[in-house]
Length: 264
Image (cartoon, rainbow, N blue to C red; front, side, top):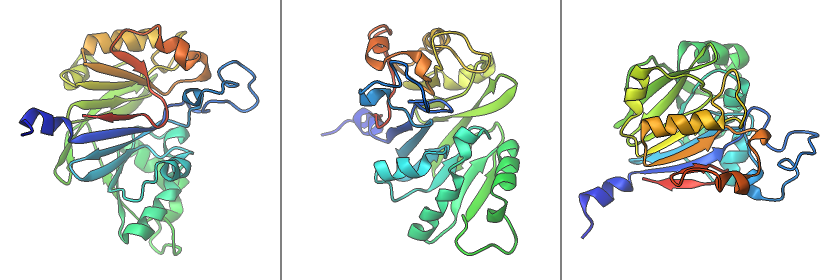
């Protein structure tokens, strides 16, 4: 007989669709060891995750590689899209939501703050016109603030951080928190994360950066939160070779890689 604890641990499955920074890895024209690596764990599409939780399928961010990521993982059902912020490496693939409109024969629920909303309406204006061209993305755009909300019966807790001076949302879903493109999180927002069994946080490179946690800062952040497991994402080629860096990390911390799956 399965215990209640084991049942709860199987309620969420997360797949890393991409774990790279804005240029991805390899970078066009770069001849460094990481970009020339033959290890698939050093090949990084733009950062995004796919979450299956309580029968609901959620994607966080639709970057430039969104179509490729959906095809690679054979994803043919999606209930909602959450956006962290309006930078192109996190929203440029928005147009390909229309494939799910066709498959599912309904509008896609999209959750975004006011800054992302304005960016989507500017860059993909044709999806928001009163008289739409046939076949453009069909979405129900839900405006979110720094307050918890629900997608069906799944509670979503926004966690706000700063990407230099730009507000960015991470999201806690059950015992998993996903936080990317931040270099500062207030004490109050950290309290929302504490108790997470899995923390996913950006670690751009080993040296400091003006708008992202470095690897050292991300490790310190993970230690402060106290999650059982910490995975680093949104990494550039400057992070180093996956296998070498992985061996340098604390026992409960890991470099994520494209296609990695976590079950909770």
